[in-house]
Length: 88
Image (tube, rainbow, N blue to C red):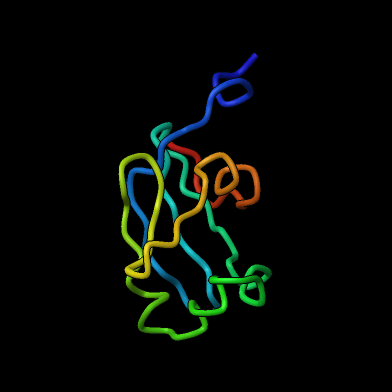
């Protein structure tokens, strides 16, 4: 069993991309892309349609957050993202 099957992985870096996507690097060195667009019509996530707010994303502890204090669970980020690059 792989570690990520029973434990979440911390986010080590985040970079906003075009199309409301995020480039995430996790502690296992995987680079993954998370698409935020499916969430943009839900509650406080609607605020992220403002591209300057969307681009304010930073790493906070083991996950990410925006300047409006919205955050996402690192497990969700990992499970719903697409692998871009496998770390060595």
